[in-house]
Image (cartoon, rainbow, N blue to C red; front, side, top):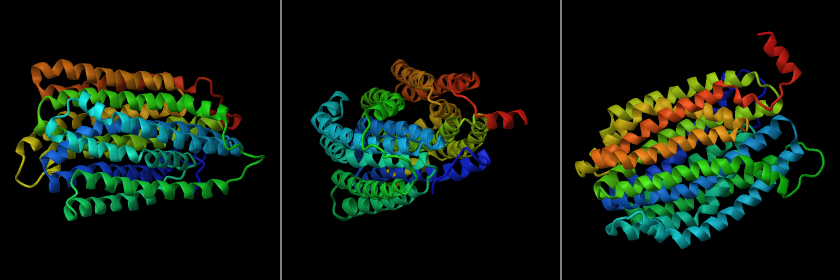
Length: 456
């Protein structure tokens, strides 16, 4: 189903479009959470720590996939909103070819550097071999991961957030079943967790790819779309590269933080492993809802219906708070319960304590980071990537610097304290950029839009 977001009630469109995105993210995060839960429950704390130690490195590779997703989604949304179907199909063809090439390069580079990266992070010797094993299998699936993210970005750009959801639900449930089969049934340990994810994600990406090809072929166009266009790749890169850098900088920052965490021993590493996955689940959920607004903004900017964007912003705030507040309460009040998912019942109190304390410090500020992401989504949808990058990098730099400063006097607690400060300052900057009207500059309203705005 393809949706034109330049028509209809903005709040209704966003709820209908963004909820499947949120559900998709929930199931996608089940990949990572299920890996840690199964590893901790059936293979022990050391396996949980090994998966956790490799997690910040995997996020570097994920940065390329998600950043490319965003770049393609914005460009395709703008072309779709402007009804330039031939150019839109050229953009899709170019993106698919480019991401397969990028995935192959990342796979080769990752396999060559995986041991070095984990060594630089001072990964403890008792979990090093398992961490390398998990990371290498993850890297082998980079082409699948990249391809799936690009397909998802194109589906959402066309206003279809349901099709990738169906694939992802089946894939996530399959991943969980394979996790349990390989680890609990076949005693494969960390290797079983890694191969379960590889297989499930590979199937999902191929199904999404072939379905997308059929969907795009059915769309109308005049002329002959190109299989590859350097000019279109440059246009996609203008949005994708800042998004990749944003995600990569966050991942690199997480590497520095992981390096600090590793100094506090296996119990803190394991606790942080579980807590950071829960935190990522929450923040990625906010990001998914914000991405819905980004697609909405991009289509309306492309169509020249700029007066609809502030309405979408207000509806997006309401929508994201409906998710952020309950999750914050759950993690604040039930942190020991959710951390208990990652370890065997009655064991590892130090692991639960470390992860629970992280959640108690960070979760109350989820509404703050949610506001930042909603404001960022409008800037990104309008192509204002410089402002988007300023707020993101400010958050990251503050978090890393403060983590190092606070870890000395406050220990691991000082590391957790850096999150709220970075989020708070970056949120203020994002809202100021949005309120200044920067996103409007360079974009013309259509005559119809101007008449509608003048009559209200």
